[in-house]
Length: 456
Ligand code: UDX
Image 1 (cartoon, rainbow, N blue to C red):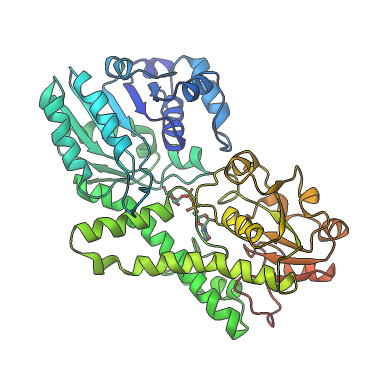
Image 2 (image 1 turned 45 degrees about the horizontal axis):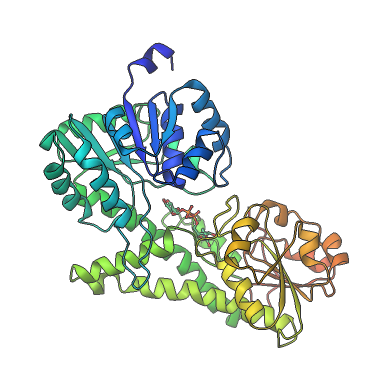
């Protein structure tokens, strides 16, 4: 993109510089827009303005630094700065699960609109990206029109975000699809302008109403969670039928109507999106009087949580029937590889449960130790995989980082007290580990089955 073209591009603010907001702000600057990232947390703003990412995400930090150097990207704590700077405002604040219920906590979205709205004195488009219960955008649009001095010249649109942690740059610069929930041709035109690059590269651009746009996001996450829990339900059957769920999954995945994505059996889903989104979706369905339509998601959630319990049972079996006085080495604590995110991490849940049952648990993760230590100080943390398994009676693979998939079973074998391993992610080459005299067990592979295909 030529610099002359950049000069004509819009001024965009990104409100909320968490995971989603930071990736979005950095990638918009990379696309050539003038971008101001705004967050109420001064410490976060300071770190970002220095070119440091407050979380782990491959490939994002160099783009952050390039954006700052170019002068197109800046950060602030001030909503007044945001209103003065931008004619497009993206709302990227968090919508966590409420403490006492399944429903989403919308206080950050409400706070953001309430802070910005009264400052909007010229025509602009406010675009929601946060994941919200269907119907939220309609309410926010009315509130914005009431609050903004510019009145109806301040419009609201909804443009859900589908990025995966660990793939934020690619998913933001080249998304699978762009969904534009709009109420006017003007709003559609602004969104087409913002996403001109990916649209030109062939990304489908779908124009919908506000409610459909909100629903696309939660429906997509509900479907992904259902697929993962489906294959994990098959894993439960395989375990008692002495079958191998990894081969079953591969065979199912060749049917193009089924596909192999989100069909990897193991410890199940966690993170900041899938678990809370399916729960908030159920809560919203209840409010709308269509609870039965989504009651299957309760089972999706239950299947997912049962995998964690099964992992604990398998570990106990290999520990000789009790965790008392046993040493357990854990490889991986993030909710998935290439992330330092421990929100609703199945791995951390399992490690803490086993420690609570009397074992002495030592954990290693390439990125997530800092966060895990704060959340679970009772666990012991190691600086390497070898250190984590030294003296272990049982070793557990809980997050399938490449480093663990490629680990040498002989080298780890020399460090442990007993060569027992449970592969919680079906990520290891079972034959290789068995050849190195390990007692190898995996989730979803009956004790009699001999396979266990390594993850791709
Ligand atoms: C997810 C959605 O993919 C993304 O589109 C949405 O915007 C946010 O939520 P993310 O949370 O980054 O993204 O993770 P994802 O890669 O989907 O994995 C979610 C969880 O499911 C992880 O804990 C992962 O280990 C687990 N998983 C994923 C499986 O157990 N099996 C699979 O086959 C895929």
